[in-house]
Image 1 (cartoon, rainbow, N blue to C red):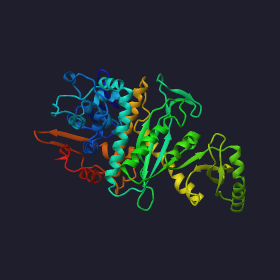
Image 2 (cartoon, rainbow, N blue to C red):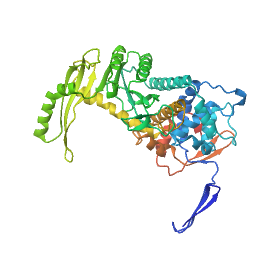
Image 3 (spheres, rainbow, N blue to C red):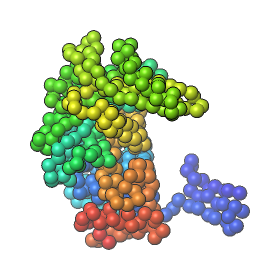
Image 4 (cartoon, rainbow, N blue to C red):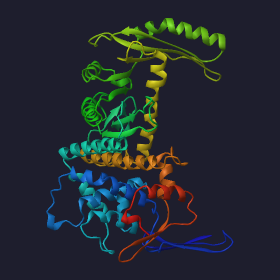
Length: 475
C-alpha cells in the first residue's frame, strides 16, 4: 500500500507500506542538495572555455542597467546547464532556479557572489529573453558559436592541419502547433521546421578522419525550405574561417542528395574545395549504370550473396553548366526474407581522376553517415524543442541546444581513454552529470559531497583534474 501526504497539488511525502518488508517514508524536504551534482563538470568546462561569455558578447542587452536583477550571463548559463542535464522545458526553471548547485554555477555571472537566498531567473524571465532577441542578435550568436568551436579546435591542434571535411545535413523538426513558418512537408508527411546542421571533421597526419564530427552551425529554416536554402551562406563563412585559422588546409565537402543542385555545384567549384555530393537516381543515370549492374547481378547469382561493383562515368544533368565525374556503385542486395533488391547509387565529385571509385565511395563518402548519429544526439539534447510561436525565439532555442551540445562534445573528448570515450550524450549525462550531491557553503569554500557509490567516480575525477585549478572544484 502507498499513501501520500499532499499539500495543494504537490506530493510532499509518500509512505510505502507492506512492500519492502519495512514501511518506507519518503519526503521531498532535503535542503542544500541537488540531483545534478555532476554538472560541476559542465560548469567547469564553460567557465574554462568561455562559451557562455562568448554568447553573451554577441547579444545586445537593451535593458536599463539599474533595473537588471538577472544578468544575461546568468540566464544563458542556466539554460545551457539545464539542457546539458536533460531539462529541455523552460518551465523547469520554476524549480531549478532554487537548485543550490545551479545557483552556485551561475553565480559567475555576477560581479559579486550571489546571496544564498537569491534564486536564479524564473521561467517567465527566461521566456522574455527568448522573445526579445532580434535577427541581428541571432546572426551574431550563430557566428559566435562557429568561431568559438573553430578557435577551440585550433588551440587543440598547434601543429599544421592538412585536411578538414565539412558535412551539411538537414533534419526534420515536427511542429507542435502555431509556430511561425512551419509548413507541411510531403517527404516527412508532417508539419515541420527543417534545421540545417553543419559539422567539421579533422584528419590526422596520415589523412585518416578523426572519430568526432564537431558541430559548428545550426540554422533553423521554414518547413518548405529547399535543401540548398541557407547552405551556401553557412559554407561560405565556414570555409573562409577554416582557411583563416588553418593556413594551407584542404577543405572537403560531403553532401546528401538534396544538395545536388547546379547552383550548389558551381558554388563549391568557385570556392576551390573538393566535394562529394549524392545524386538521385534518374533514367539517364540508370542507363549509364546498367553495364555495372549486369556484373553485380552475375556476381550475386554465382555467390548467392549481395554483390557490388564500382565504376564511374561523365554526366551532366540538363541544368548543369558542364559534365562532371560521377562515381557509380552498382549493388545487388540479397536478403533471405525480402529477396533480391537492386540498389544503384551515384556521387558527383571533382576529386582527381586517379582517385579510386570504390575508395571514394566506401571510405570517403559513406563516412558522412555518422553525422546521423550526431543529429540523433542533438535531438536528445532538445534541438526540436521549438515550441515558441515566434520563429526567431525558436532559432534562439536551436542555438542554445547547439551550444549545450558543444559542451557535451567537449566533455566526451575529455573522457578519451575511458569507457565513456564513445558514449552518446545521454549516456554521458546519466553517468557523469546525474549524480546526487550535498552542498555546503562556508566563507571561502563550497563543499560538494557526491555518493561514494558513484559508478564512474574515477572517470569523473579524471575529467575534473583536467580542468585545472577552478575555485568551484576546490575542496
